[in-house]
Image (cartoon, rainbow, N blue to C red; front, side, top):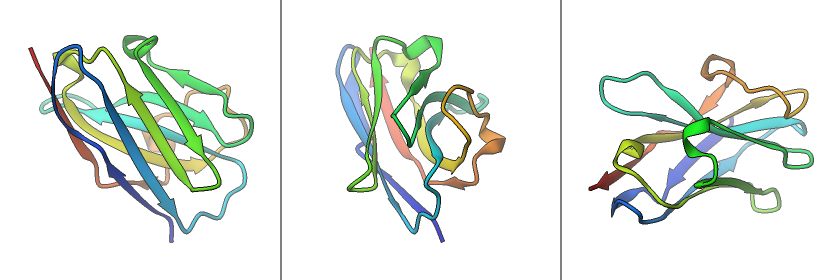
Length: 126
Protein backbone atom coordinates (compact mmCIF):
# COMPACT_ATOMS: atom_id res chain seq x y z
CA UNK A 1 0.00 0.00 0.00
CA UNK A 2 1.42 3.35 -1.05
CA UNK A 3 1.49 5.97 1.66
CA UNK A 4 2.27 9.66 1.27
CA UNK A 5 2.87 11.97 4.20
CA UNK A 6 3.27 15.72 3.72
CA UNK A 7 5.03 18.09 6.07
CA UNK A 8 6.51 21.57 6.11
CA UNK A 9 3.41 23.72 5.94
CA UNK A 10 2.97 26.75 8.14
CA UNK A 11 2.23 30.44 8.30
CA UNK A 12 4.44 33.01 6.62
CA UNK A 13 4.22 36.59 5.51
CA UNK A 14 3.97 37.53 1.86
CA UNK A 15 7.34 37.33 0.19
CA UNK A 16 8.50 34.54 2.45
CA UNK A 17 9.43 30.95 1.67
CA UNK A 18 8.43 27.46 2.71
CA UNK A 19 9.59 24.01 1.67
CA UNK A 20 7.02 21.24 1.64
CA UNK A 21 8.10 17.62 1.88
CA UNK A 22 6.28 14.45 0.98
CA UNK A 23 7.55 11.10 2.23
CA UNK A 24 6.52 8.14 0.09
CA UNK A 25 6.51 4.51 1.10
CA UNK A 26 5.29 1.22 -0.32
CA UNK A 27 5.89 2.32 -3.90
CA UNK A 28 5.65 -0.26 -6.68
CA UNK A 29 6.15 1.73 -9.90
CA UNK A 30 9.37 2.56 -11.70
CA UNK A 31 7.71 5.03 -14.02
CA UNK A 32 5.55 7.45 -12.09
CA UNK A 33 4.51 11.02 -11.78
CA UNK A 34 4.34 12.87 -8.54
CA UNK A 35 2.42 16.07 -8.17
CA UNK A 36 1.58 18.83 -5.75
CA UNK A 37 -1.99 20.06 -5.62
CA UNK A 38 -3.66 22.71 -3.52
CA UNK A 39 -7.17 23.55 -2.49
CA UNK A 40 -8.35 26.72 -0.84
CA UNK A 41 -11.70 26.88 0.99
CA UNK A 42 -14.56 27.17 -1.47
CA UNK A 43 -12.31 26.64 -4.46
CA UNK A 44 -11.57 23.72 -6.74
CA UNK A 45 -8.47 21.64 -6.33
CA UNK A 46 -5.63 22.98 -8.46
CA UNK A 47 -2.58 21.23 -9.80
CA UNK A 48 0.55 23.15 -8.83
CA UNK A 49 3.54 21.14 -10.06
CA UNK A 50 4.41 17.72 -11.42
CA UNK A 51 7.61 15.72 -11.77
CA UNK A 52 8.38 12.51 -13.64
CA UNK A 53 10.38 9.77 -11.96
CA UNK A 54 12.76 9.19 -14.86
CA UNK A 55 14.80 12.21 -15.81
CA UNK A 56 12.94 14.53 -13.48
CA UNK A 57 11.04 16.53 -16.10
CA UNK A 58 8.77 19.08 -14.48
CA UNK A 59 5.59 20.99 -15.21
CA UNK A 60 4.11 23.96 -13.36
CA UNK A 61 0.88 25.83 -13.37
CA UNK A 62 1.37 29.36 -14.68
CA UNK A 63 0.69 31.11 -11.37
CA UNK A 64 3.70 29.52 -9.66
CA UNK A 65 6.25 29.46 -12.48
CA UNK A 66 9.47 31.12 -11.39
CA UNK A 67 8.49 30.98 -7.72
CA UNK A 68 7.99 27.29 -6.94
CA UNK A 69 10.35 24.40 -7.62
CA UNK A 70 9.38 20.73 -7.45
CA UNK A 71 12.13 18.18 -6.88
CA UNK A 72 12.58 14.60 -5.80
CA UNK A 73 15.14 12.47 -4.05
CA UNK A 74 14.51 8.97 -5.35
CA UNK A 75 17.03 7.42 -2.98
CA UNK A 76 15.08 8.77 -0.01
CA UNK A 77 11.62 8.43 -1.60
CA UNK A 78 11.03 12.11 -0.96
CA UNK A 79 9.22 14.78 -2.94
CA UNK A 80 9.72 18.49 -2.28
CA UNK A 81 8.12 21.78 -3.19
CA UNK A 82 10.25 24.84 -2.60
CA UNK A 83 7.97 27.85 -2.49
CA UNK A 84 9.50 31.31 -2.71
CA UNK A 85 8.00 34.78 -3.01
CA UNK A 86 4.80 33.50 -1.48
CA UNK A 87 1.62 35.46 -2.00
CA UNK A 88 -1.64 35.50 -0.01
CA UNK A 89 -3.32 33.74 -2.93
CA UNK A 90 -1.02 30.76 -2.35
CA UNK A 91 -2.88 30.08 0.89
CA UNK A 92 -4.37 26.59 0.68
CA UNK A 93 -4.10 23.01 1.84
CA UNK A 94 -1.34 21.40 -0.16
CA UNK A 95 -1.41 17.73 -1.11
CA UNK A 96 1.09 15.44 -2.76
CA UNK A 97 -0.09 12.68 -5.05
CA UNK A 98 1.38 9.95 -7.19
CA UNK A 99 0.43 7.64 -10.02
CA UNK A 100 1.94 5.55 -12.76
CA UNK A 101 2.56 7.59 -15.88
CA UNK A 102 4.22 6.87 -19.21
CA UNK A 103 6.23 10.09 -19.43
CA UNK A 104 6.46 13.52 -17.91
CA UNK A 105 5.33 15.57 -20.88
CA UNK A 106 1.62 15.57 -20.12
CA UNK A 107 -0.05 17.32 -17.21
CA UNK A 108 -2.01 14.76 -15.20
CA UNK A 109 -5.34 15.83 -13.77
CA UNK A 110 -6.20 15.18 -10.17
CA UNK A 111 -8.53 12.35 -11.13
CA UNK A 112 -5.61 10.53 -12.72
CA UNK A 113 -3.66 10.26 -9.48
CA UNK A 114 -4.17 7.08 -7.47
CA UNK A 115 -2.59 7.94 -4.15
CA UNK A 116 -2.84 11.07 -2.03
CA UNK A 117 -1.40 12.38 1.18
CA UNK A 118 -3.42 13.95 3.97
CA UNK A 119 -2.32 17.49 3.20
CA UNK A 120 -0.40 20.27 4.90
CA UNK A 121 -1.73 23.79 5.41
CA UNK A 122 0.05 26.82 3.97
CA UNK A 123 -1.11 30.25 5.08
CA UNK A 124 0.38 33.43 3.64
CA UNK A 125 -0.51 36.72 5.26
CA UNK A 126 -0.22 40.13 3.63
